[in-house]
Image 1 (spheres, helix red, strand yellow):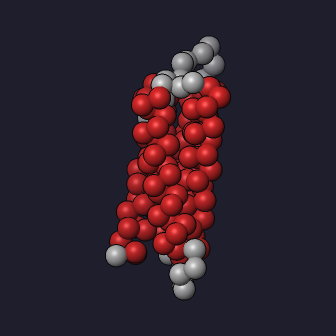
Image 2 (spheres, one colour):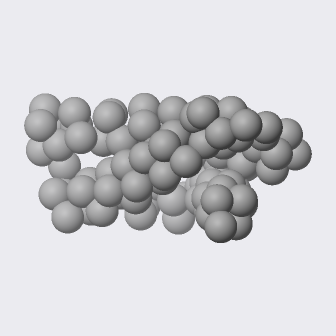
Length: 120
């Protein structure tokens, strides 16, 4: 059961990343990010929202180690923390921010709690 849920979490990570990597304009619009006169925003989408998540998810599957899955949880914990700090400081659209932050928090909690002290 733990292994199956870990793999699902890693595949979700890859899936989320593929949106940013292959469809950065769509991802930016989904995140309410406005275009500018520069294409640097698309580059950032491909890098930080795309490639980073794709490669992390692939690496976790390749390593197939409980600590790798736990570290993926730490990544999601950082994302959730940033999201919830943003809710307090930046006043983003609440439903969208809480939805994304909730997904990140659930993935963080699962991956950390299920894997941190699990033997390899």
